[in-house]
View (cartoon, rainbow, N blue to C red):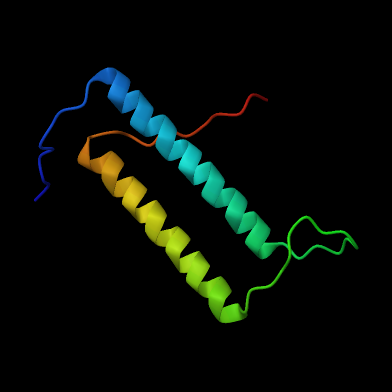
Length: 87
């Protein structure tokens, strides 16, 4: 059974929560990209200094954070909007 939110959000708060969640997801995606990209540059922007076990832990935490974001949106009856890119 779904928990009813203790407090209702007004429209401004809903937009803010949705926008903040989208920004957090964008940053997590950027972190994943950095984590999974091996640069061949002699002057890489990021150092690949994680062990495979550490990399897995980071990926697991990112997944857990995304799960919590979705739960928060669900808790307040907010839909996840997909961005439509112009053609």
